[in-house]
Image (cartoon, rainbow, N blue to C red; front, top):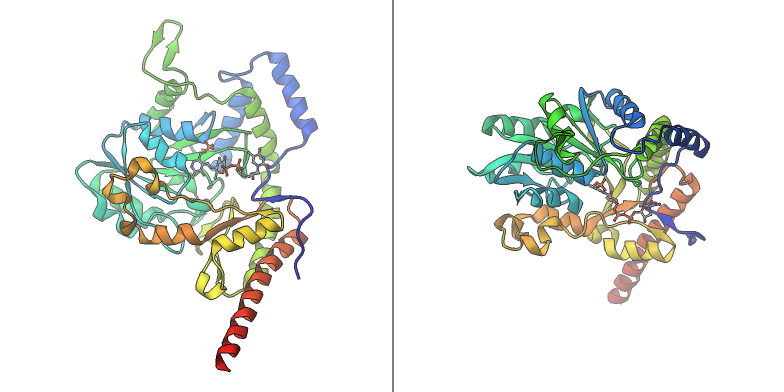
Length: 390
Ligand code: T4K
């Protein structure tokens, strides 16, 4: 019989670097009196991330949402953008703020990513781009998406908020599409407290994004375009530089946690663990399960509530579907009957606690809680069956 936890166990905890190291770095910032507007910490982090992510071009931002919003703006998109309904609100809100209309495409029931097979049918003369999300850090079908984009001359943007460090066939995730956004929010594997970045291949975007994130200011005499304030400051960059030093260690810890979950849940009927495909490597951002109510005996919502009673706060990411937001109710592509797989996933998926500081014993205990629910249901089912038989 599993036990409740004394202290709350959350879906994640921030990766906190050594405080002395952060303080030391902060002293440098204080001494310099340059707190924001592209100082030494910003430039150092930018250089280090370029190497880590193996990219030629990177621009850093105050958060992932503004990075995506301004990235779409920089690409000068118009009309319709094909995207997924199974994502965090920021993905589609970045489209809204650019006056772009999302066209929702159903998802693949195995990866929960946009179903590349269903994209082509949604293309109209207004379509200018495909906005894929590497949901839970597992890569989209990048090759198929690129083939469609090439055929119809569309831009490809990836929301890689969860995909820091993910690869496809050994190629870093930012190698695909025209542009990739990363989130460096506190809940992300790599964090700068709040923060984000865009990576891209077109050198001309360096200048445009530089303007867009800094009010369009060219110099003291000239403002070239209507931008925003979306700069990453020196405190954020300092934290990021120290977090970057411990990211690999965190990935290793998460690998062990992932294996413990997988081993403990493998025999539980009705639970599917979301894994990466053979040619892909994961970002270790989320650990996600899918609960088949019929086989497991109880719904995802029931499991979510039972875990909460034991002080375990798993999350129903990404519920509600973005297509169900009230302001999209007039869109044909947002109608539930057009998104059957997304409608199923949103009722079955649960993001489990997943962070390096989580002990292996705690993971085993969380799995035991889930197994207990299943066994209880199974016993109840047999009892009812036997009663019915006489
Ligand atoms: N695209 C996608 C696909 C995304 O998932 C996101 C963000 C974005 C775009 C936008 O990127 P950013 O603009 O955020 O850079 C969290 C994050 O706030 C959000 O960044 C993230 N996705 C989303 C999936 O998760 P919530 O509403 O779940 O956050 P919250 O505050 O409930 O945090 C979850 C748990 O984490 C808490 O229960 C406890 C723990 N926590 C959280 C914070 C903030 C801590 O232990 N310490 C903390 O400081 O959205």
